[in-house]
Image (cartoon, rainbow, N blue to C red; front, side, top):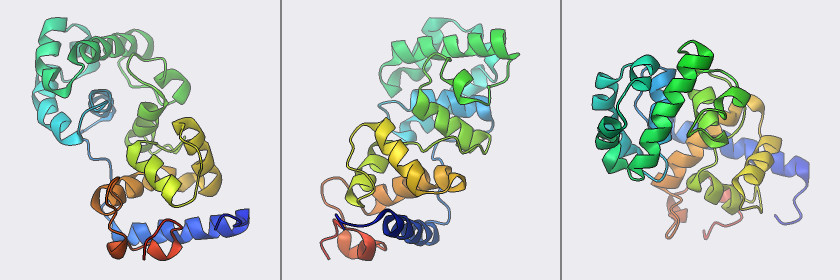
Length: 216
């Protein structure tokens, strides 16, 4: 597949997408949330932390600080205590309060709906903004590239890059815009279930026939 034409690669990418969508019909963001504010908080906390751990922490956090206005007025020490188990808790607590303060001051308490405004919030980079836009607002602005997405993209021959921004760019060229948000979920679910980093289960992979890295 090293000499695969752009057209053939795009066709193969479409087949893989459809097969994974059939395999994981429930694929979605794993962070529990009820609104854009809660998803923003959860995504900031998910850096260097499992979604499972974040979902254990956020119920109490949301109970005490149900909206940006409440979080903006929070004591740093109280937030640090609540998010301690997610790691890097001091930095995350500062970012959460800073994010809430900016949302209240600049956006009337509403999470902004643009990449440009989101990445200006403390603790929010392009990856986090893509999560928020795609899952809270249904806006396909880009592709979330985490470790699973990057690994599968390389194994499937969709990119040769390691830099997340370049991987995202390559994926955006291959897949239609309306598929970008779901694509990340499908790759993440497949990465966790089958295409593991150390021992991928190629014999159980539903897209093995279209994967240049498959051992079967």
